Length: 178
Image: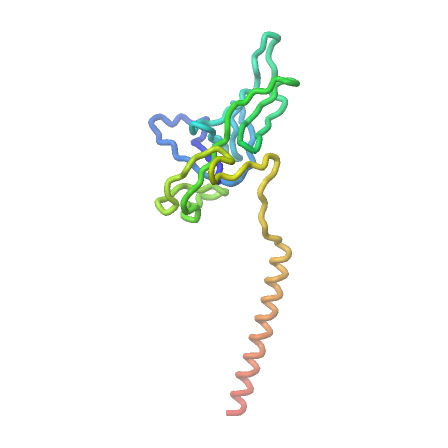
């Protein structure tokens, strides 16, 4: 599945249609308002297609407690710990799945938009139906080793140059014989 991103939080979008964007980049942080956002400030959407907000302080009878930890479990539930032991669930991450994910339009920075070719998204919580589970604390990295690929490219280039020289020699020999 894909994480669902909403419109930027700081901008006033009166009568504007919410255009969701989709990403597999799971690196998120808190903005100054307590919203969980990606590196571009687009909010992570939760159940009900609303932005997940983790208030930075929690009022208690003894005063205000500040955030000390934020955890996301494999089911996508976002739990915020205030002070030493006040735990509060503030939302649940939703994922989007597409009939044809290759039909998504790449809009840059590991973000995609829905297209007629991709089909309508299906939204669900992690581990529900065909949705995958979340791996908190992990980032998906490239499965390509750049050094191996460069070595392979150089070997292929050398082989091509060798074949090219053999063909050139063959042409020259044929010219001499004629």
